[in-house]
Amino acid sequence: PTHPLLGRRVSQNIPDWRSFIDPQIVPYLADHRVEGEAVVRRASLAEMMLAAGRDGFGAGPPEILHLHLPRPLPLSDR
Image (cartoon, rainbow, N blue to C red; front, side, top):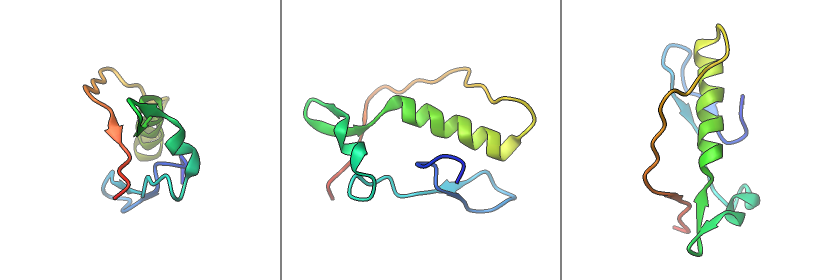
């Protein structure tokens, strides 16, 4: 994979990657907490987007122009 959390690309024809973001599999993910709840770091989400851009579109460095993440993405224990 191009990024440890991005996972594997599903198809060369479609920009779609699949992965399990699970603190049981990747224990350091549970270290980042907001109000006691384990959440995905926003920097990790941006890194995954940039890796997907490099892998999916090649040609030049990718750029994130606008990124709005209004609330944390929790890592559920379910």
